[in-house]
Length: 583
Ligand code: ADP
Image 1 (tube, rainbow, N blue to C red):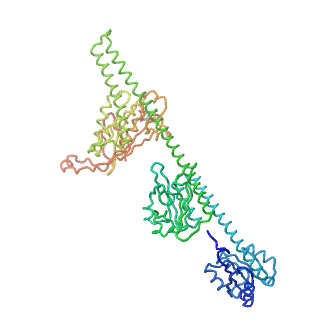
Image 2 (image 1 turned 60 degrees about the vertical axis):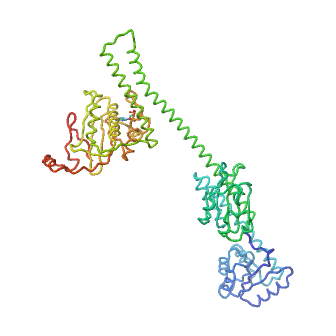
Image 3 (image 1 turned 135 degrees about the vertical axis):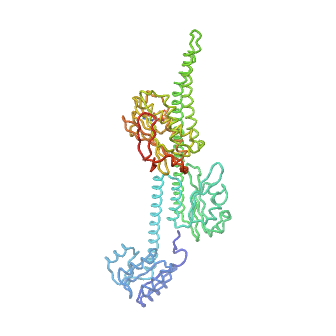
């Protein structure tokens, strides 16, 4: 900012005084003052004085407080409010020390008593007033700059978001320097290109044209290349600016400073003015200081990103080790058993009868199935994570599917300990699903229901539907799950630590596979459980609209009314009818 000073042209003084004789005397006094006396403009009332002030070319005001249209302190307040930047000297007929002090406190530069004045004294008072006002303005402006720097430091230290910091920096610079447009261009060391990271005040065209700037090209490119500030007060005179569309944007002045961290140029902070503007040394220094702060912020953000990348790598490493540990542990048991059965069968010194051989081979077959399941689970999980799980969907009666799974699972249980209940309505519950995948979900849930109810009990597989949705559940009367583990049981490799789970084999993959399959269907799964009483795993499926039944089929069903799924009779698979929750 450049204040108009006494060196540029004779100062212009506005005398607001209603006594024409005194105004005339002042003019005479100034005329015989040696040097370059100020030019004097006179106003005989406050209103005409304010009109002159509104033009903005007055360097100092000489003010009589008693005017026809205003009086006393109010006169000062109104002049000060109209031109806060203009120094005001009070002219008074009274040699009143108390009033003089009060006026100076209020912002007047001086208080002069009319009878004690001569031309020299007048000019000196005026020069001092202008200089004092200039110094005051300077301090106020510096203060604003420091506050801006402080505000920026706070933003930088509090915001983890680099994008936010860069935009805040541009906004602050524009605000404090009262400038029209500004940007931050960040340098890519590998490509040597600067790219626009934050901007304010440019047209869309200019933004498009300056999205990337080559190192060394145009003003911004040169600032980045030299690592030094460049200040251009008249863009049109500087051929270096041709690339920055300055003329089309009507930009007059440019200043750019490098954004540095430890002597490395990371980018450029540039500001542009649409009116003629000379950047002061202080303003350039402020810009450099902000550039430095932004450099620190970028460096911090990069370090934080590197740290989080290292954390992610460490986490990946940990997961990989966990995976290897879990998988090898799980594979070892069936592999060990297969090895034992094979070695035994191969013994030449022992002759096994056919029945024994069959038993061993059955065991090998079972263990191989377990191995296959673990590997399948792992492959499924990896497909789910990469979005490669393909579903082969078709209309399926979910009740029938559950019955089929239950029938095969029955072979694995001891009928004396566990019993299965199939709790579905007699009418088909149709859904468009991948039957193999939903079968896998039911198998995993039923297998868990068996594994985690070592004391036996009833395992119910049930389903109900309303017009749009099916709810399917698998309920056991087993050990249950503590509330703090309910969410986590669906995490990969998560196994609840307790006596039972230690005795039961498992890789902690089954439930995450179930969740992945249901998510791929656009559905969800959850669990409700009471420790010591049992667990119920629920999942949803979208119901397929049933095709209208032929009339004779309806007639055949006679009085069997279907008023809603809750009232549909249940199909009893084993033992007594156990109706689960309705929907
Ligand atoms: P796995 O059974 O192979 O350990 P899952 O992913 O199927 O892995 O299950 C994760 C954990 O959730 C199990 O280790 C067990 O602690 C708990 N869990 C699963 N189903 C039940 C259930 N029906 N009753 C009690 N706990 C269960």
